[in-house]
Picture (cartoon, helix red, strand yellow):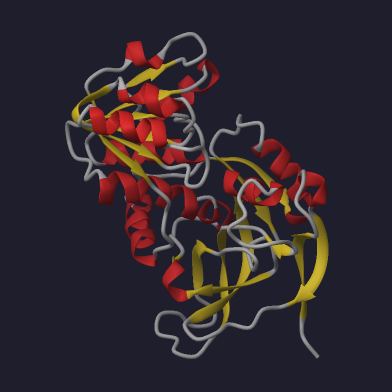
Length: 314
């Protein structure tokens, strides 16, 4: 008889109300995978976009959502090389066998040892947002000391981590945010703040080397106006709006435009852990909710007013 576990699933696309607590078979780790007993799961905007059907790369329901997790290795599959039962880990899972469950089978390459200084909630808030900030700033832009970077939605899940990563690399950071988030962002080291509700950022930011954009839409073409010659605009929203116009405008102006989607990487998570342990990076957790309140977590996330991350606990 198969072993059962609790999970959050959905039988159709729709609003937060389609999420329900179910009992399903516990997964078995395959070759190169670890079965993780999930203690906390981060909530990302991608989760509710998948739930609603706006993103359909994982097929049709039913499935289990959740990209971020922190927990303990329960067992390992064949060809295990990195982890053993009892190891505390954090990393990335994907639907249809996501992190909103008591257990998740995850490729070892998508996991890393959990940062020793963090509890499971703080660790679960990091993987996807931190990778989505780290990989484009470090691997794509090669951001370094003295460069000017503009970070949109700077107080959001990706933004507040991107701010800290950019500061750790010696960059001059400008952030867009509502005024009620400004004190928070000053505490993270932002050098200049733009209240996008009253100020057109294209008039306030100039000679920018790198723009990190998790918003997309009209923010792309407008951000091109802030760039220095040969500057780079990185759209980290993944799938979403058509970027044809901004791509063409960037090419005409000799500017660089990059559509970026993060890749699970235990190696990059180790680099992120080094920043955490040095005191240079910390994920802010806006709210912590139990797993059975996943629908409420999605409602909050969809307001786009969350400061940092929401985390579900098991």
